Length: 112
Length: 113
Image (cartoon, rainbow over all chains, first blue to last red; front, side):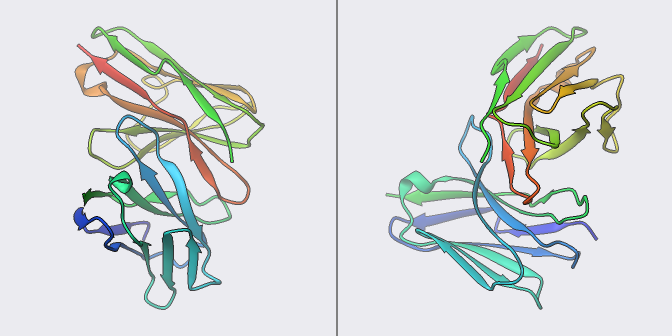
C-alpha cells in the first residue's frame, strides 16, 4: 500500500509546549521519511528527514522519532513558538523510483 | 538544497484560456515534478517532467490538459489548457535529488473566473 496516514488534522499548542504529529506508513520499501513545513502562500519547505537505520534525529527544536517495527514516525516540536504555526506534512519515499507519498497535513497553531 | 523559482507567482485567468507556468532551478536535476495543491489540502502529483522525453502523468491527469515541457535539466513548463474554475489551485514545481531530498518552488496561485 502507498498511503501515509497523518494525525491529528489540526493541533493547538500553548507557547513553550511540545507539538507532536504522527504518521504511519504501510510500504516497507520506503526508506526516506521527510517532514515539510508550509506557511500560507508559500511552497512546502523541507524541515527534517530520517532514514530507517536510525530511531531518532534531532535538529534544533525539531525531532523525528522513528519506529520501524510499527511503521510509524513522528515529529516533535519542542518549546513551540507562535512562529511555528504552519501546516506540516509528513512524507515517505524510497530509492528505485518510488514516488513521494504525502500525508494529509496537520495545521498547527501555537497560542502566545 | 535547491533554489526554485516559478513564474508567474499568481494569475487570474478567464475560462477557456491557457496559462503556462515556468519553473527554473539553480542547478541541474534529473527528477522534476509538477504538483497541484487545493486550499487546505495535501499535494497531488500531476506528472513527472522527463528531460528529453514525454512527461509521465498520474492517474486523472492527461497531456492534452496539462502539457509539460522539459528542454533541459534546469527548466520546465506546465501549461494548464482550456481552463475552467475547477483548475483554480496552487501549482508547485518540485525537484528531487538522488539522495531523495525533495524541494519545492514557491508555487503559482491560479484563479480561473
